[in-house]
Length: 256
Ligand code: NAD
Image (tube, rainbow, N blue to C red; front, side, top):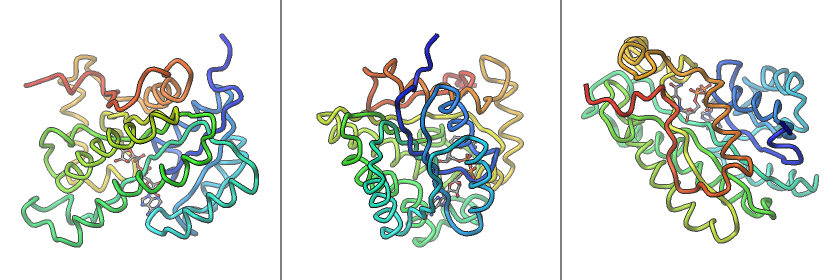
């Protein structure tokens, strides 16, 4: 079978380490022949992500803190001057204060609420606005969501509200960018033990519950998220936009 992403260039934001869902996606993209541009959040992640970039044969590894407009603008300018056309963008970024993932939702502060919305939702809008002019032949933008967007998951709290807004943003962006041939979708992944997930109080209880109840009776393998992201970025996904695709061993279907 020919490689599904041969000749395509993908910008992937959100690798912190080998356990990041963005890493599994980058690994699958590389397997399918994509040229990779990776970003990292700040100086603390630089060395690790540059090392992973070498491993993944990335064309470019650049800093990009999505809370800073100037870093997004600088990234766009660098891609423009390197004459890089983007075919795919993966936004795999979220953040909330740890206390907002451990105490009752009612206790969420205004500042904590706005921070979660800024980093986990508005950043998708900002990234799409930065990347769209570079996607001159159309393409695919994919973000990562979670079931907490539409069901109550204990302690997911402020991030559940952010994911609900993220999924709505996917639909509005898909409507705006569709006429330019740019598709926008979310993958709603089942729980996976990553650095971000560990911030949610009692996260291992969620993992155990899903493994017992999901139709496939197991948790999600990050590689499954990577393969679905490949589908969305490839020509196989050409008819899919404004969608949320669950890659969660079927857990979202269960009532009890
Ligand atoms: P992760 O901690 O590996 O990745 C989160 C990334 O967000 C990190 O790379 C971090 O640097 C980045 N980030 C946070 N603030 C940033 C900022 N200001 N600028 C730039 N980058 C910033 O964890 P993950 O689980 O791989 O999370 C990736 C995405 O997947 C998130 O949107 C998360 O909500 C989503 N998701 C995770 C799970 C899960 O169970 N792990 C399930 C469904 C969805």
